[in-house]
Amino acid sequence: MTKGLFTDDSQRHLARTVSDLAHCNPFLPERLELERQALGTAHVAEDADWNRRSLNSADHPNVQRLFKRCTELVDAIRPADPAKARRDADWPLYEDVVLFVLYHRYYEHVDQTVERGIAGGRSVKVKYFDRYAADFEHYLGPADITPELSMNKSHVLACFFQIRRAFRQIFRYLVGASGPTVRLRAAIWQSIFTHDMRRYRRTLFERMGDITTLITGPSGSGKELVARAIGRSRYIPFDPNTGRFTEDFAGSFHALNVSALAPTLVESELFGHRRGAFTGAVGDRAGWLEQCPPLGTVFLDEIGDLDQGIQVKLLRVLQDRTFQRLGDTEDRLFEGKIIAATNRDLVEAMDRGTFRTDFYYRLCADHVETYPLRDQLDDRPDDLGDLLQHIARRMIGDEGETLAKETARWVDQRMPADYAWPGNVRELEQCVRNVMIRNAYQPRPSATANGWRAVLSRHMLAGDYTADQVLQQYCTLVYAKAGSYEAAARRLDLDRRTVKAKIDPDLLARIRGEH
Image (tube, rainbow, N blue to C red; front, top):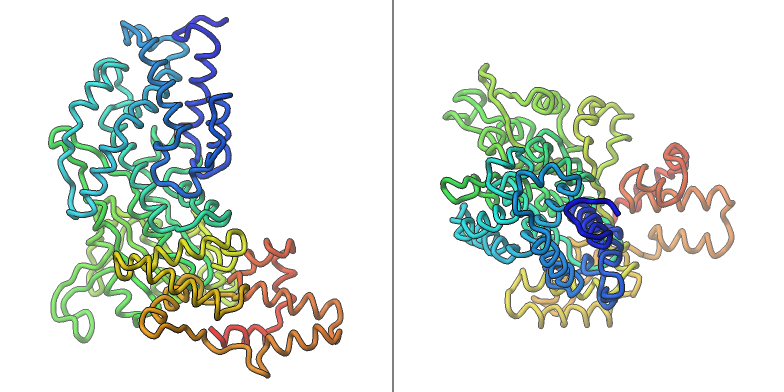
């Protein structure tokens, strides 16, 4: 048995498992497997997959039992001389278990800080910092023996604050427990913290603003919600002198739909302008890039519709972090993060020459893909009720539960069980509004007698198509639903070039004409 801080191999096994658990993606299966390994026969199987449905994972019996075991462990082996113990090979594991204990000891306090920040729209006083700092030093020693930043108590508290905000934002904006939803949560978590949480805590926490995130997926599938979850979960330092986090996270997200404005107005909104730069520019104006704080985020929706001239200017922002106001020659620094989204196939746009290749590769350092609502409901039909509850409560507050039940009855009684929801979550929101106002919802007409569905069904059932024609029609259908050649190729298990070659442009135009 190896000598060290731990008195036996069972303690060391628990510490190693908890260390891995604390640094893994909580939405991936490995997190739950590590809980099982750490607890052994004490593991509770019922509702063990808390990562599908619960913001407050720390309330689950498995996490509570782990917290109790880890607290007992660090209390039992806490070294009398932390400075000397730091030279022990077991010290890094001991540190990780201490951080696990402190995180769960203070998570409710941190959650209250998050909630007050949302409600008040500004950074609030952290009244528990002195107690937290005393506990930190009780286990790890005074600050002068923990010089590295990754174990600075203010930095660790800032990481706790970021983790709790990330949980809250992810569960706030992504409703449901389906496989696609959990996978999307895991992807968002990686966009915030990367796949290596240890490296993130050491160095990457202050560099993630340099990484642009591209979100792709069908229209109405929640791309802006994903962007908000990422943008509002950025690292914010804690200042022990003021007892506050240094920036307000609630107001740090700025969204701009580039397809809704003329190119000149898009430029003005983004870069700002000098007086007289164009007709109507009656004064100097700072754009979103200039107004965005260093830890803020600018979200560019419908980036696929961006004029190529603006693509060039944004490329400079992504490369050099500098820009100029319209009509000005002074370079200004952009210190925030850019998140972009589109429902267009950017690879196809590059092939057509309407989207710059160099701009694309600067955008997609981090790529998140959303999914159609139908995929979520196919995996877990009960998610429909959860989504209706979420939408209705957000819409009318306390009476939302009743409205959600009314809408669920209407959908169950009047709509096909396999209805495609082509407008995705946005269409589901419209359904709730219609039921609220008229107690009815009429989907946009599509399957007319001569509609593409009827034609496709008639020829398919009659056996009119060759095998190649069947593949062509199906590839077109999946491409229209997936939104890109890459996504369609993954679903079809085909090469992207094969999918592209099989697209029927006439059928694609008829399908898109419905939406």
